[in-house]
Amino acid sequence: MKKILVALLLILTICLGMVSMAGCGGKKEEPKFELEQGITYDGSEVEITFYHTMGANLRGVLDKYIAKFNELYPKIKITHSQVGSYDDVRDKIATELTVGNQPNIAYCYPDHVALYNLAGAVVTLDELIASKAEVKRADGTTETLGLTDEQIDDFIDAYYKEGTEFEGGKMHTLPLSKSTEVLYYNKTFFDKHGLKVPTTWDEMEDVCAKILKIDPKCIPLGYDSEANWFITMTEQLKTPYTSATGDHFLFNTKENQAFVKRFAEWHKKGYVTTEEIYGSYTSGLFTNLKETEARSYMCIGSSAGASYQRPTKDANGKYPFDVGITTIPQADASNKKVISQGPSLCIFNGTEQEVLASWLFAKYLTTTVEFQAEFSMISGYVPVIESVSEHPVYSNFIKTANGGDNITALSAKVCLDQKDAYYVSPAFNGSSEARDQVGQLLQYCMVQCKTAKDVDAMIDKAFKDAVAECEYMS
Image (cartoon, rainbow, N blue to C red):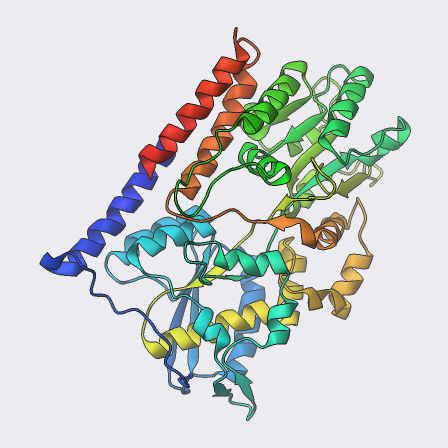
């Protein structure tokens, strides 16, 4: 209920702001940036504001590279602010849009951008990317304002294409740093009992049954995000989820009901729990060493949270078990799909030189190998450009990968190895509600399956109610 009220207030706030700025005619008069042919950054003084969620360690990296950027563009002043969580960034910007006080650049997720688009506030990047205009830098060199073919090709394909997942297909964002879901497993336990690490959901069901026989008190698998699980299954099975055009909410299908029923039965058998059902991240189950409490031997969670999946060292300074990391199970080996997550950058409307300066800075952060390498190693996220793998420091970092002290490197290695499997969902006003609803739907069915007299009817109604809620909110 709280999420629904927040979403309603955000949409109402933006819409009221649009009307207030429009006057009696009801049409918003705010100018929108359009790049004229040959126009480029002219070297004038510009102040740029950047909203993000970085902690102190990452802000230190950002400051280091702002200084390097200013060696090239000394008159572009970058002021950056940590604004709580990703949703806090969204909420603050939604409010500021009503008075035209939004930042120039911000961390964003696709559904955030869809919300900002209600006010026509986000600069589409296609013309900037394609620009062949030259920009003079303070060191006497020049660069192309847009992206070169080599720079575009360097982006991991799915990360780059995320920026086009909007109605009309125009580019709205550049990827900054990314994460995904991976399967963490207790390698020591698997090796001891001769268990095969599951690569399919059928194998996952089989190994969960075997683990439960070995340790009847355990919950073999923890899956942190019900929403990710649902959406990923639709991608793997090629079944409908949402669409950016036409009828948005397409997920009520017999095929989708079937996998929800299957996972509800898993929960009933004690094979799996989730973050919402367990009441906390399931890494707590995975790293638990107390014999009197339940534990898990597998966990599907964020690749950026690898350090939380590592158990505490014992009195001898050793890890009680070795952690293995691999790609999540698949429904079809010929259609491997893993979710793409993590922040991108969007640019907001402003003066011509503000937008151009913002673009140059966003381009710098996303295409500079050294920044991408250092930021990724500290954050636990993975770089968005492939050439980082060839950077000597990052390459050595990946070579140290193991399930102990260097577990973050192991997680990053798995992420880079599966780069061709990433997907993103369509973004539109209401896409975040769809995500919330399918997550709640899966959780509800898993819990209710234990007592429902007619499971099929219960699941069918849950799907219909979820679609109705999405339509009501959009």
